[in-house]
Length: 304
Length: 223
Image (tube, rainbow over all chains, first blue to last red):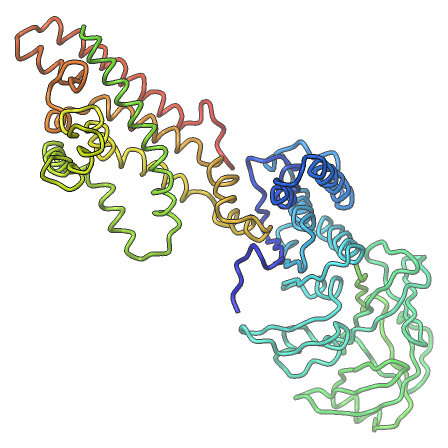
């Protein structure tokens, strides 16, 4: 089923901005709207004026939402990479697309700009109710921006599902390798202070090191790699590890030289331990243990 | 100084440039954007006047518009007179003669427009024709001006084709280059040198303008 690009209602934003160099920011944003106006050319002037007026308001509105208000009279060559990408998004959203295709739109930007833009774009997509498909190689970006994720390896979709599900339970080794195996636990920040972020995940509370500023109440993913989870059978004395969770061993599986111990500590968590440790602790399914995770080993990804 | 001949040449060159702008833009567009595989044949035909001796081109044009061809007969029936040895006949010959000087700069500039800009425009719901008008043309101003100016200058200097198709009728087909040839034939070197000098200065000025344009002295380059 082939449709010409004009009638697909799908706007695209690429990695490199494709702003029209001979038009100002305003005319770039208005580019797709003005077309809608020209269709109405035959209708009497009054109506056309109103449409033009609306397009002017729409440009101002969308420029404000994307934080490029005040740049309307500039030409694309006078914009920074981040500004250009914002204008690009504004131009795409101004046409009220039925679908927005984002092809690694933040890949060419510096890290702070990327993080800011991710947050702005996600909230904008939510307020405008625009469905979007984001192509990315950046797993943090997939976590921060995505609701559903499809893992594509060698041109084939290997797994589709909610972001946290797919990250936590990859179908096969290929998907696991592509994503990096770790538990992705959806939670909410309940307190911030003293360099620590307190995150409520289900019934438990995790303490994570505060790497980027984050506000209480924010929705986040707490990501924990199985390598970073240690298992203790006795209550330890004073230790630097911040998180100690009462856990029950659900299953033990051998993965080459190490064992993967699946734990239930209110949330599902895997631990990778050596076979020697497992034998010394005499672990078996059903055993009550303590799972320990250092605060610095918890990777907090804000849901943009 | 043969002002009549110079004025005729300027009129002929202006008409040729204008006609080539109207006809050359669609042709260049087709050459650049058509998916047809055999378009290289068309490109070769467009470039033919660059290598063909003007007498050969002129000969074929003369035959094609003459009373023996259907085109020539049809024109004669409508206009009441034939095409050879008229201004209109010269215009047709000049358009063919200068075709590559207009179409090649046009198509080179069209092809240089970043394809992603076109795709971006299409995905914003803008038709191909609109995209051409609003994106490709504005970004190709330099190529358009270059093509017009070059075909103007080239027509101004044509000799062989004019001689074959137009002959030598004062005010009708005696262009400036033929006027110079006549002056030399009749050993009027003073007249020949004055007319030649004018043509030299004009040609130099035009080419200077074209190269200044290429260096973006007046029109800003795109990024």
